[in-house]
Length: 415
Picture (cartoon, rainbow, N blue to C red):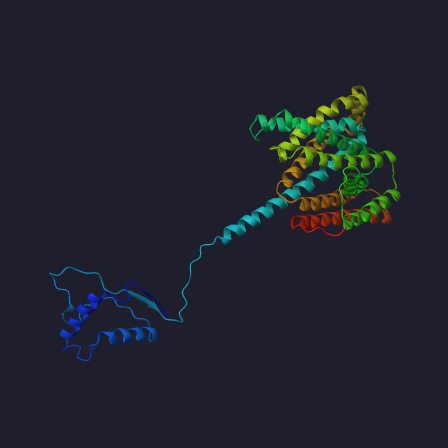
């Protein structure tokens, strides 16, 4: 029995008053107990053993009736009781629904980022390969990609669509080595795709984790446990198998993809070391990176290829393809910036492991779609090599995640 009482018993003066009133009403309650102590004990036992009792008024007990001249008094006893086996609901205000909705919204947001990232990357690679087939000038193509992204961001800042970042000279100094490595990696990848199939370039680029470990080990002196080195075996073996069995193998395309891997490894290292503590991130960070890379690349593009070669090549491409060629150039330039921008935005929302897995899945989608669209001939052994390389990249991401958990818990695995 659960009982709530404002006052289970009143003060002793009230009980004395109650005793006099009960004795005065013998005619009505002749059998009422005269011993107040027994009254209290019997009442207490009855409350404990019988069903709930609620006393709403003491009126009608002999001369205890309130007269018209007497001042109204509050009830001496107010009791609310419930049966012992009668469960009562308890109101707990915990906003589970709102938390679940927030978690679902976050998952949906990450899913949209990934889907957009993969779709934009596939579209860019398709149009980029079409442009390079008709207009084999990778230096100018790379320059136009950076120029389109820079122009888009300048317009966004000027129109207040996006908030312009607050930068200083120190920021641009720290960004310069990152932009230099980014420029080299971007041009080398474009040169590779101008010489070989898109699928082959991305198979070789899936070996980037191997370059990351080797550079960190031999140039930076960083040590890695055995599982990390073992995860590189399928990456290196798969890339080698795919390269050996590639029907349209080209050394320039192969070397370009390898240089791109090495350059992007240094870009990541410079970014981690030089950009720590900088407030610019995500979309604006990549915009600043594109603008600085454009300034670095433009003079080299002019020196290597030059306006005269560009003019001749442009005329030939327009005469063969028609006005659609202009659309191809615009599309590959715009989609290059968009897919990179979305990838940097998604990196702010997810963990590095999730990003690595997403990058691996992105390469699979690019390889498969390019083979279908361009009808690239693929031997079974070549496809096996690609699958092994991509699988190795996934295993490497899993091992790196496990090592991060060990470091976070101050547990160092045996080397």
